[in-house]
Image (cartoon, rainbow, N blue to C red; front, side):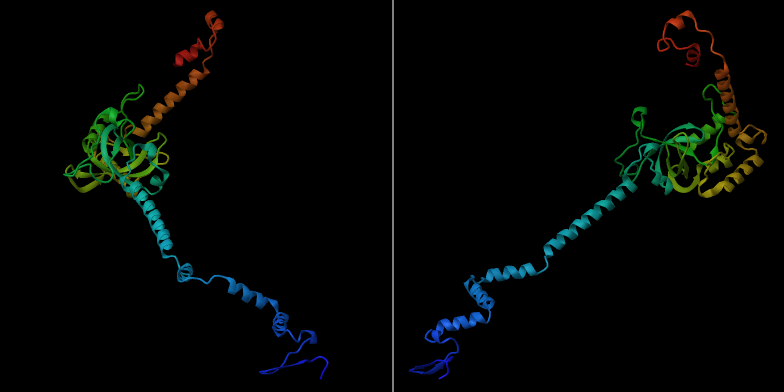
Length: 332
C-alpha cells in the first residue's frame, strides 16, 4: 500500500480519499477542507445568500417599478414647462394688446424701434401741431359692449395722457413766453381741433423729441362715425396750407417720406391756401422760432456782460442767502 494513500473498507464498498493519512477517518471534514482549498469566496457567498430572507412578490414588483420610466414625473415636468410658456406668452400678449400706456414716460425704446401703433382718444389740442392722447388699448371703450370710459376732467387726466408731436408738420406758433403769435396761428389751431379733438386717432410712434414728447404719425378717419377712408393728419395739414414742412434736425416723416410733404406744400403754395394766402415770402414757423431764439440768446449775453453794481451797505451786512444780489433779484 502506498504511504500517501489510505483505503477504507465499508459495508457498502470501498472509498478512496486523497489526502493526509491522519484525516482518513474524517471524510466530512476533509470534504469541507477540499472545497475551501478550491476557493473560500464561493463558499462564503453561497452561505451568505442562503442566510438572507427571500424577496416576496411585492418586493419584486416594487423593484420592477423602479426600473420602469416614471411617467408621472415626466408629465409633471411637461406641464410645468407648458404653464411657464403660457405665462410668458400671456404676459407678452397683455403688454402688446391690453396694457395701457399712461404717458410718454411709459413709451419704451422697443416701442420706438418697432414703430408701434397705438390707438387713443384726443383729449386736448394744446398747439397747432401737437395734442394729448389717452391710450385706449384692446376693447371695451366704444360700441354696444362699452364697459370702460375715457376720463374727461383735468384731475382724472393728470399724468394719464401721451403728449404727441405730429411728425413732418410745423404749424404757426401761438403766443408763448411773451412773444407775439404768428399770423394764422389761431386758424391752424382751429383746423387741427376740428379734425382730432375728442376723436379716436391711431398714432405710429417714431421717436422722442428734445422736450420729452412722442413724435408720431397720426391717422384719423375722414368721417367721424365711419372708420374708412383714413388720412395722415400732418400731411393733410400741410396740403391744406395750415402748416409748413418741418425740416429741422432729426426730422422724421413716416412712410410717406419727405418728398410727399414737400409736394403737398408746393401744392398749397401754388393754390395760396392757409398761411400762403399772401404768397411764399412769409416768415415760416422755423424762421419765427430762430428769430426769437436769437433775441433771447442776445438778451442773456447782455445780462451776463452787465457789470455787477457796487453792493449797498445792507447787502454787505446781510449774507447772500438772506439777501441775493441785485442781478439775481432782477432775473427772478
